[in-house]
Amino acid sequence: MPLVQISGDGKRQGAGPRPAGTAFSVCFRIIWTLIGLWAALSPAGPLAAQDAAPADIDTAQVEQRSNRPPLYDDPATIGPPAWAQGPPDNSAAFLQPFGSNLFSGNFSKSYYDGLSPTYLIKPGDRVVVRMWGAKSFDDVLAVDQQGNLFLPEIGPVPVDGLTQTQLLAAVRDKLSTVFTGNVEVYVNLMNAQPVAVYVTGFVDKPGRYAGGPTDSPLYYMDLAGGINIHQGSYRQVEIRRGNSTLAVLDLYDFILNGNLPNVRLRDGDSIVVRKKGLTVAAAGRLPHPGLYELKADENQGAHLMALASPLNSVSHVSLSGVRQQAPFRTYMTVEDFRGFRLNDNDTVEFHANRQSDVIMVNASGAVLDGSARYPVRRGATLSALLRYVAVDEELANWPAVYLRRQTVAAQQKKSIMDALRRLEQSTLTATSASVEESAIRVQEAKLVQDFIKRAAAIQPNGVVVVSHRGQLNDLPLEDGDTIVIPQKTSVVLVTGEVMLPNSVAYSSKMSLTDYITGAGGFTDRADKGNILVVKPNGEVGPAKTLGLGPGDNLMVMPAYDSKDMQIFKDLTQVIYQIAIAAGVAIGL
Image 1: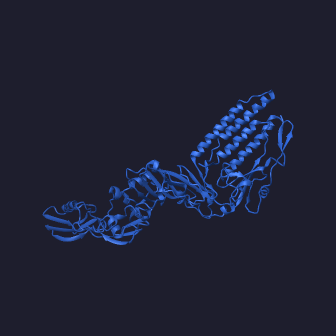
Image 2: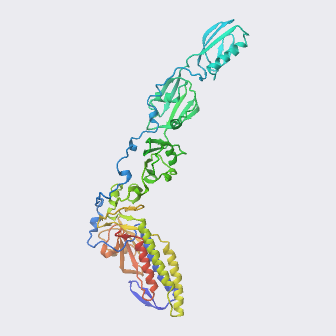
Image 3: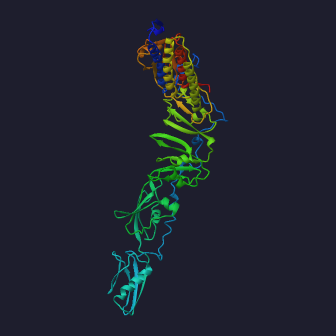
């Protein structure tokens, strides 16, 4: 069976018969070269359908533009992202820490110098003792540091931790050990001895404050001006005595549940407010918008919801913050948010949206966020969203903006699979006129089956070309769309049938031949008359028609002859269909 070889100048030359396996190896090396070209180009800019811009485009003028392409307003469809539709009613910039209203002076005004029936005696308290009968005594005694009340001629009476009612019984019992009768006694606990407590850490007015031993830590913290709203923690308030921590006060537990540690303060004790921990701003549909402090091991969305108590109507949550040192935004259902891990300084807004009201659109490329997700109203247009995408204007290549769409990718995938099924059917049902031809058909079928298996795994990109001649063709966005704003580049990528696929620095003075030479020149399989250029926006066409510019991809296609092998022609057509369909769809 005669084959065709490719000479150095790209012309076909006849050759003698070769074994069928060798012939198909040559053919399929060329086929897989085409697939390799397509795969290599996909990351930088997928292939586009050959609907190229007219040749009279001034590419140099377009490349020098640094401003955004014209945006066309349509009041009926404009829908900016939810986070960009103006500040919410409770802007995170003005939110106060949850619990900051505790220290408005109400605790510091509640000093009580009396004693409750449950008051427990402690060292330093003063007791009035009166005795008459066989023994007379009338004086005010102090409870010493050992917790004893020392009665003259009688001895020490342990009273530390006793109530006032128990105090009288303890004194009588002690008297009975010395006097058998004819002695009466009267005791009365006077006002509790004032104590001085240090309040320090992240409070507005740290210092030493006087109060009663029955006063709560909140009284002393209120005297100190309360917790510093910018730095102080509402969940880590330590009560210390010397080098020991008596208790750790969680003010959220007090606010929500009314719980306070049962600690009797003494003279010289300290209240230390630690630095605030992980803090999240919560706003939207909840009764108490504010800054909520989360514990290190309780930093999921469910923990925030337990504190903020969002309204029952809430269905979705928008979140912005920083992840991996880059701005981050996302939008999710309440159910997904419960298990979402929060970071310090995140901003969360609770919404009552139907799922159909908001869609998610991605942006990547020369975006300051690196890669971000934006919630937008259904029906919003591309130009409306581009108003709010923060980009690096020095790097953004606006004339090359393109769109990736999931529905387009699904349609392309279906089209490719249909073509592969037709190819398989035509291969398996091909007839043979001789035994030799039958053997060739068997080898063809094996090769085609392997090709179909590999090609079926290819995932289309669903690229939609939306910019022509530097003008943006506006279109409504769909859920899951990705807007790609490529970065400017000063090189031209040369691939395909060249000796050394390479990137060559762009120069307006260089010709097409110069770029090919910069990549080592043509291979012996190159079709020198079939050189395509893929523009950064996805457009593709003959290099002679579209011209060259920075960021372009030059593809030198292989030469082939299909006059003796129809299956090779069919395979090549499928490969081109895969390359085009998986790369770009125009005019959607």
